[in-house]
Length: 478
Image (cartoon, helix red, strand yellow):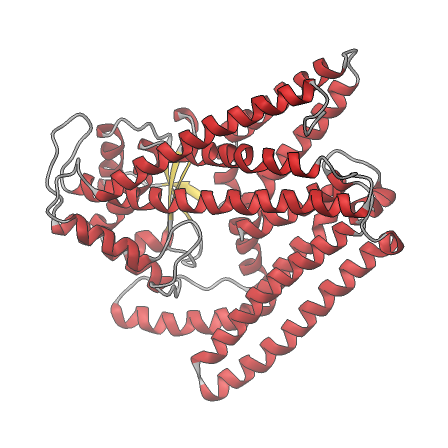
């Protein structure tokens, strides 16, 4: 879902950069075409979902559920394609014609059909999700597990939007508003071209740092979170953070009505850093498994994975984007082919950046798993290495398998940022009996960091070369 939201923002950005619409004849019809195509996709999904639900009630075959899930996934990507196509033919320009160039307002209005379409998909597939939950409720009762009341259709969609859409939409909207406001502020200053560019860059970087530093308190309110109650579990988790030298403002319970089994670490700076555990995770996992998940999140903080992931994005953009800019600068950006080449270059840069991000992220996930096993085996910051115990590796592996079971995840199927559950469990199993300072997951993460450093160095050299060419009138920005 995060990739879909990013893709929608990228489509708006590209349309802004490209300027004139690719198909001027359709520029005045972007809004009705977008709404019409979105409505047609949702209507088709509604009909298919209704038919499959009816058949599911008759024969109870799981393939009915798979069919709806597959159709919903396809519908999301089709809606993104519709949104991107509408942007290409002038969606943003037409929206501005209606409401004006409001700071971040016109972009959010242009995004509205896509975002509302995503919410409508969840509204449509709710009956299938409800039937799955009913079946899982019977299984939970048989096993003596806690059962949460399933939310109504409206609340289900609202919770889904808060958890999946607003989590990305709000920070991106704040960054967009800051960037547009900074551009207008700097434009009103009496500065020459180079001074204006430098001032704008400084203000935008400041905004980026402020948003990422201070967004966590807002995000934990977008999610429905409450502090973890005082007790033995909170004492164990707080002690774990202290012994590893990780400052955490609070451990929070993420109330999802039992819909999600997950954990997260949010925040870059100590006073605004939180570790979040969902209600279902606390209900279904043993205390040792909960500690393993929390240790996994502490491992992300301890190894500074978030800044390294950000550095991988910056390095990738510099390494891939600068040469692409050199290639496209020879084409006239005012022509259709020049626009296509420019857009293709940006899409290629983004695609390669995502590839690098995924590769680095998957190695960091395994290192966080290994950190959990190291903690449960008795390793402490500044202490001696320990041998990874079978019980510690099993606790983290079992937590992963319970997550997969709760979310109907195929454990052999890899995901973009986390890899496959099976691969992570195999990595933990291979660590049993090894010294905690010689784990393969740590070595793989170290190689990923060196690769990021190399990309940053190469990217900086390419950027410096571009500046030199720009001074001579040949650079991609000159």
